[in-house]
Length: 108
Image 1 (cartoon, rainbow, N blue to C red):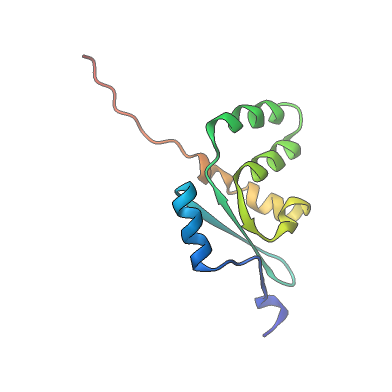
Image 2: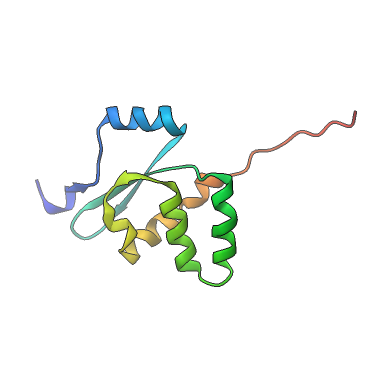
């Protein structure tokens, strides 16, 4: 096995099933570096956490990204919480966790 194919942070299918039962949707994020593929698992954020994250983003985007990551964190490679490149890789795709759904409006 070459270093490039080393995967860090993967969990078992049983763990993913437990997370799904507890949190609903579970998302896997893979970030490839020179030596490995780093994996983390996130859930959709709770609405009360989004206010604090949005407020923090006005003054410090990096701190807000870390708050968002921690609010959604389920497991995986802990380096995501301290490595700027890994966190940036996840941050570029975090919008998936908060995609809005279309609403239909009817006048009654």
